[in-house]
Image 1 (cartoon, rainbow, N blue to C red):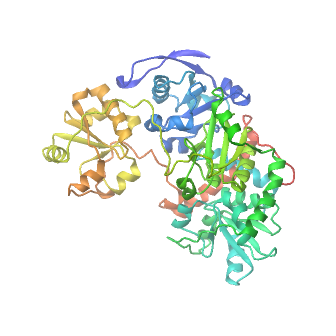
Image 2: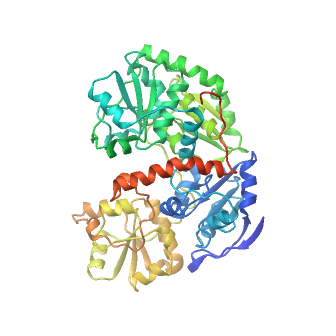
Length: 551
């Protein structure tokens, strides 16, 4: 490794010496057994569309202090930071990590471009490691599938079949195949037995595209379900493209398992525990894992949202099992970390989730069954821990804000996120991204006082501090309460028709379902996803393990 003097634009932060790591050095580090986290600090759309390192996670500079504690909880973890290679974002992100206590931070030399120039694969898309794994599973184990035309014909003829949707409940509510049950993937082995009237019933697993259809179907095959199980080929995308309708705003959740159904689920999961050597820990063993500060430990609760909110272990994070497999990079940043999956005492959902995480490459995976009689539990949605928050900035009242906007003495910038901004914003507010705060923002303010609005109060504090570094404390204030406070005072909000874009909406990636040319976007997406298997064949930095006939 070498060291460079970080070039941080527009005096947002003082220069600091940060070491660098080359692409080849990073590959070697990813291949050994020591912990490491690799983060892309660009906005999400740039991570998705412009290409990234497969074994990295998106952690935009805009959200760094708000998410890093959950994603990289141990301050001694080696962290490699990168951007496109020429933006200065990586330098700013690396310095911020050092400031909040991370002790081993390096820059990827040349960023994505340096990685590409070294001959390594660059991947577009989101949650790509999990989606590439889905393609591997289908090819390695021959996961059977059914085309939408055949499924529609069987449904029209009232054939003996069930359609189970492996996505999360919110996605199912947005749209679903008529007659399907909402059974998120980790719930499938737990709830399927009461949905299947006989061993002759065909079981069809679907999702929006491919991955969760494949993983869900293969999960039931792996647990020994005697029925014929198939994935809907290319999911709801193919269903829509074939001209078939979808239900919307509809719930059809699978019931809690009956006693007989639970017994079948428990028997089906026992072989997975043996096959993948899944270790179950008791409370004393869990306490020992938590006390070991030399290793990173993720406590992830794989039950439903309602179960989690009704009572969970302190400092555990809700990560519904099916989604955890689908989007591992949303919860786990540190490679070679320890992972404890928390479930009820039955452990069906934690076992199926553990089996997939082990195949994805996490070796130290454990399960823990909550004991509601002895475990001290927290109620509610869980706590988020932001790091490095500055002192609150001066605030402005609703009346002062309205008066200043009317008199054109204030420039208002909304940092809430582009989707929220499109839905509603204060008249005159310009959408802006924290990662793009620089002289352009001061130019746009044109000498007027700057007011920051953000739905997240912690983000508003961070933004105000960043602006104050280049404009001075006396030039920036925060409107506390954001849109809700404005609305509560009797003022009106505006929508997308009145949007003013200081920065592009790079903070989100637009699903193919919401593109203008939906069917064209479907084809592009499916072609991309199927093509991941060829990228994996060319990629020398990662390999998934084959476990015989079944995964």
